[in-house]
Structure formats: C-alpha cells, structure tokens
Image (cartoon, rainbow, N blue to C red):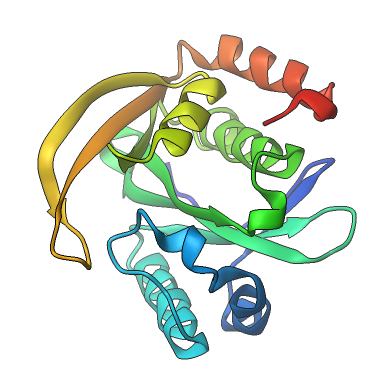
Length: 199
C-alpha cells in the first residue's frame, strides 16, 4: 500500500492533489468559524490556512498523509479539503480525516461523493483492509455523517486530546473494513443515484 498523489473524479466532486496554489481558494471558503468549532486548532487567517496546507504537504513528503483539495465538479470551485492520514502500509490501514467543506456544500452530494472516491481508492486500488474515521465526541453532526457512510463506531477515547480552548476532547473512532466495503459501496452508490436525498 503506497498512496501517491492522484486526481479522483466523481459526478459531484473532484479530489485534486493539494498544493500551495489552492491556498487562496481555500482561504476564501474555509475561514468561517463554524467550520472550526470542533477542531483542535482553528484557522482564522489566510496565513494560518497557508501553514495548514504547508504542514499537510510536509506530512505527504514524510509518507504519513496524502492531502486533497475538494472541488465542486460542476463549477470547478474549491470547496474544501480532506486527506488520507496515519498511513500504515505494513498494516494496510489509513484514516480519512482532516475533512472540511464550505458551509454551502455541507450535507450535499459533493461530500458523499468525496467519501465514496476516497473509500473506493483506498480499498479497490491501494488494497487497504481498514479505513478509520475519528471525530470529536461532542460533534453530533459529524458522528451522524460518518455513521451514514456505513462506518462502524468502535469506541470512545475519553479525554483523548486538549483543544485550543484547553478543554478535554473525547475522540470517537469509526472504521470500515475491506469485508464491509462491498455493502458500504452499494449504499453510497445508491445515495449518489438520488442526490436530492444525499446528506
């Protein structure tokens, strides 16, 4: 399992290898405080967005992450960011995380399509046996969205992290296994066939 930069294209979303050239577009849609409510370190300024992207690219060079810009397939507008992270080739596992979308595109087919593309590439191309998701225990919308994908909640790491407000965060772990992927894929494909019902 050796994830390399690749463009993944779907009907509603396109995932492009993240570059510093994406920073201005990401800053235009990604500095809304609503997006960073549950994140350990919120982004407030364009310089912080540049540092965020630079760190993701450094992790890519070290082989532990593979970041993407999320693009609206219809308009070509950059609408968010996501990545493969915590890549463990020896164990054929990785995490899908660090995902955020412009408020205008949350609970839309673009988000579902992005997850379908990432999961499909992980299992069908990279040969992953396990894909993980994590979220803040207080972030009910995120927990519900991950469950809707078809991921299984595995447990809660209590007081796992300290956020920017110096508060303890419980982290909820989810996963999809290779043996579960065919059923999850069918569920996601059915939702994408009826995009007005996608959320």
